[in-house]
Image 1: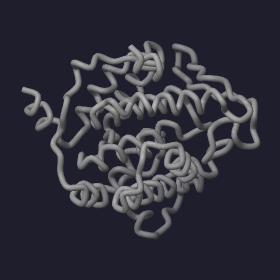
Image 2: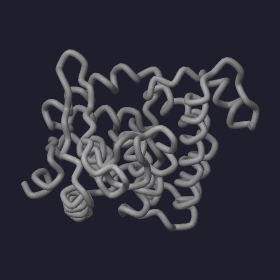
Image 3: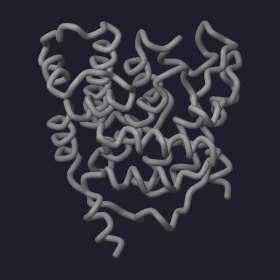
Length: 255
């Protein structure tokens, strides 16, 4: 199938809902804003950040937390700033599934953490280093090589985005997250940035954002390892559906 060939992975489309409960964009933005500390904490837990939920709330309130590494604090602040930027984009109808939005969000998410941020691998100073994803005892996943100017990454991105336009919003959003995680367009922050893009797609269509609960971090990581190895996204998509606040209502719509 052209969609799967272009993205580099497949999934069982019959296992996914064709629709999800839709609300006003203002309403989903309000929920995202109210849940922001929890979303930031969840995202931090997935990255192994040691900040507790109360500490995240304290930090987002403008008060520093003693005894924490500056790098851990900066990661939390970057997640908060990128969340606010995404929210501003959606509220102003400026979000799109596009490279400028993708790179802007990565420029905030991975700031001072990645080798380079806000550009595809090969478009900045570094032209040859190719990162990889550790899979524990199962080895490492190696994405497309970094090349000067990122010609292959740009081709894959634009072709992938074009084919995703034919998918319903819920499916498109989850698929883009896994697309970004698999192709590793940036030196770091790929999963975080791609989850922001996923939530941008959802919110622009009046669908609530998804946050993977910190309590499910191990399950998330285990399923992602299997995704990298098998290139079958079905398990991960079903997992993400289960993390959605309207999961039960979505299943009822399909019944």
